[in-house]
Image 1 (cartoon, rainbow, N blue to C red):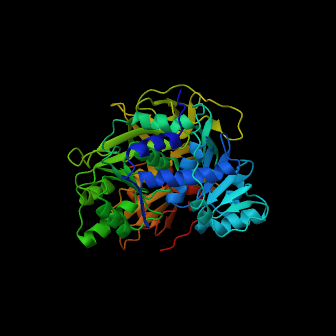
Image 2 (cartoon, one colour; image 1 turned 135 degrees about the vertical axis):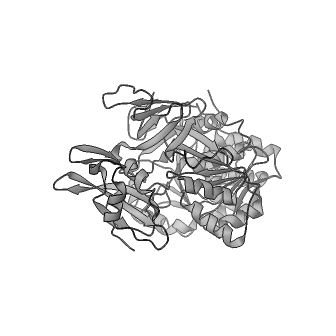
Image 3 (cartoon, rainbow, N blue to C red; image 1 turned 60 degrees about the vertical axis):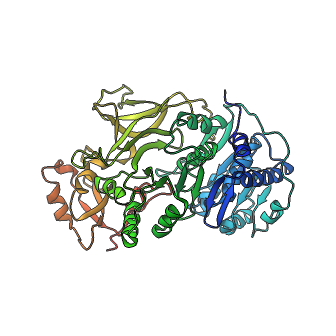
Length: 511
């Protein structure tokens, strides 16, 4: 049983590294001692306003120290922290908060208008911590008031590892975002599985991420880095030159680049500057499948890095992971859909439509199990799930690794035939004129659905539908060929960096 929270474990780590740099952000840095002090200031304000074990604390902030302090403080008190997606509309934020029964909402000034609208509608928790809002019936504590308050001097909470410690919302790519309840021990056990990973974690690690901390991947990395005594570097938005400035200044050893198309922007910026960064040990790519060209580009900027790819969910953290070195990389045999091997303590099984386990080499829907998986979904009675259904289609390769084939809901049913979006994309992406693409379905009076493809052209090229169809001949079946083409400057993505196919279905060419 894990009876320690992220906050209590951080306090122990910080006590041993008081003057070591813990957090780096756009306006400066904080040592472990400073971050611990600010965590206790926030915990004191929360505790004096009735927040304690089992309370829920919503957080609406871009990547900055406030977000980190809020997570650590809520956890230290045994409360449930509830990060809200910063890219949500007001309606989506309202829907997420509805019924969650938060006792407090901590927000940065950027989101004061959203919080004010929630307050005006009577949807805010009793306590608001932030600037620029008049809370009506809510008590509002300004951040300046937090800085002048008394630090919390009570003992940290020691809840059961099975009690909720976090409520994280899924990406919501197929509908309304669902709230996954995670135990206090979930993040700790997830970190324990990676405790020997000295390339990413430990005193010498300088980990840089621009991915939103409201998502589990970035949040998990934050927790692992801080609890291992490393330095976590964050930015509130992506800018290629700014990204490289930070890598150079902070002597970054691991970089989380999401989504994969950002790689090209980083490489272009590095080429303009003539910069190369041999100190980077691991470059992590996520959010979308990565092609051989993107892999090769990474080594132009980070020549000594291992390129890491993987597969994960909010409900179950990372399932698989794989690292590839420049020396071992073969672009001729590279499988862009390959997602690596199961992590330590993680199990995967692939089932067919009848619920039977499939043989290696056969596509099946993935079910996952791990010690750090979610307790269950908010508003659903079932808890302590055994195997979690992912909704993803995978295939087990002969060497025991896995490859991603698509989402169950990304199947296109055309003329009675099933078409994997990934099948179409794997072919179209090979066209010299194509930088990247995404397949999707649209309603069709004759076929039920028709196969469509959105393409971001390479350079000044403008492929036509006829050219795409001709290229597909002999590579995929005729019913899988795209029947509609959209040319875009870039593919729409979700906050998690995944292609948003729901939006694609409404897009028109903008080139």
